[in-house]
Image (cartoon, rainbow, N blue to C red; front, side, top):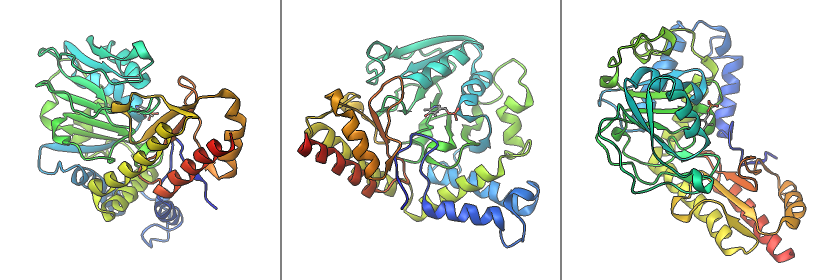
Length: 354
Ligand SMILES: *Cc1c(COP(=O)(O)O)cnc(C)c1O
């Protein structure tokens, strides 16, 4: 029996996607060749890349709105560098909501002045700052829409006229927001979209070409756009498997349909956290993430019992990040509601026993 997989990343993929991806590794498109042993310039693979780029825009409702989608390498961490390299001429603003924002800020400082418009560091990032002001002379404002480690999520897009850049690594395709409010959206595939090895980058083309510095080709968005995301050999397996996941999402009814599922999963676990006296939530209630639920046991001496029960129930990947401790249930798109039900049953069983 497959485990109930709450891993924070790399994380659960739909079973049918794993099956289709494995089939393609052995025999892709009935070519009697593996996906991994054909040219990335062959028609069969070029079609994969084109469909993946188009489907990403379609799912986000960004077709025909001046955006281009790319599948790059180097993870979301490389986007911390590329975003600043390509767009930071004088001054950029960053909303500091956790470890990943912090890392993005450090990279941006290599390229220009960085203003932290607000930070929740004072409370170990357990909330999203509100009512801050955004200077109007920024090259851009960078936000992290979902804080994977702390379990907080941006519920409202900041109001500003400066271009918005968003790290959506852990909530891409999970909920309907107005994606056209953003100038750049990026997401490492391995949280909610596919295997590690590729990063989706969606760019509004008119933001490019504005900085005066020279940009090395591999770090230049414009180069990747002009080459259709095939400037060099793309990570073919990661792109193909991400495409399969996007097809799966589309067949389920797209982002709106999955958002409803995700809301149900989140409601189920947070009600248990709130009602069960043995557990306390980490994140401020109004900022709770529908993707990553962070919580602690209220009595440390129950840890051994709870961990054993979790294991016995076939649940995997619920240990919290070392900077927060406790537990973290990551409930990405592919995680069935039933798996959350199993975890919640274990939590209430603990209450009966204790
Ligand atoms: C995991 C994660 C990252 C880092 O992604 P890599 O692909 O490992 O570089 C960045 N931002 C967020 C929000 C993440 O969850």
